[in-house]
Amino acid sequence: MEWGMKNRLSKLIQSDGKAMFLPIDHGYFQGPTSKLEAPGKTIGPILPYADAIMLTRGILRACVDPAETKPIILRVSGGTSMARREELDHEGITTSVREAIRLNASAVSMSVFVGAPNEHQTLLNLSNLVNECEDYGIPVMAVTAVGTEIGKKDARYLALASRIAAELGARVVKTYYCEENFEKVIDGCPVPVVIAGGLKVDSEIEVFNWIHDSLQKGAIGVNLGRNIWQHEHPVAMAKAIRAVIHENATPKEALQVFQQVKSGKK
Image (cartoon, rainbow, N blue to C red):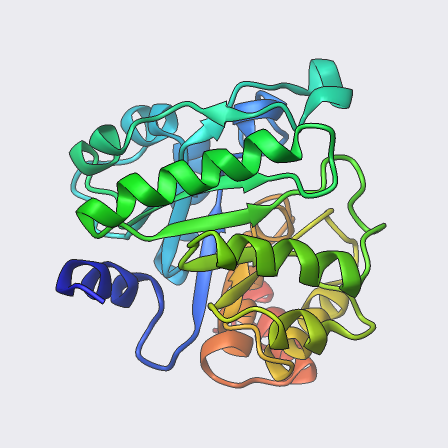
């Protein structure tokens, strides 16, 4: 691996081998998502607890202070919207690698839709993106998107999608957690895996439980947004999740961190 690639990955994956990524790229197909109407204001208090932030070039340029040193994972795919939910898999590359370099991105990310009607095109998009990014030492994170079927995908599907993304050259894979046989997803993917947050849930301990379990089964961390910035107490959630990932906290210990921060004791 070239020095530049190693250097960029080291900014994303910390010295303990773990990572906590904060995605705020939802607006590229959802529009002004709840609590992301003003992205810069939303992320201000929680950004210090993330290892990297994932977003589009438009929000980066408009809402993030250029003096910010937090590593950037630049979302470079899109071209669809929730107005046509049945065509969410019809994505293309929207941002050039040259633009990623100009914006000082540490990595780029894009979605692949395995099993969807436009699977072929999204997988070729990933292959072409990897080909170009390798020339410049920029890691590609593949997002194993599931469209509107969050919660319906099992370990067999997630393992298939993750392995294909790795085979095509992704340096990191973002996929979803499943309670049953999740270790098979990890065992079949030869590159680091981070877990998507999925739908917002009402129970903090539920979030801490699945993050802890995914780490125990081999994931290196999370790429989690809504269960932090849509929460009533986002800083408390960010600190508690960081404790699970980087301090080996149990779910119960994470809940204690959450409650302490929420009450203003920590």
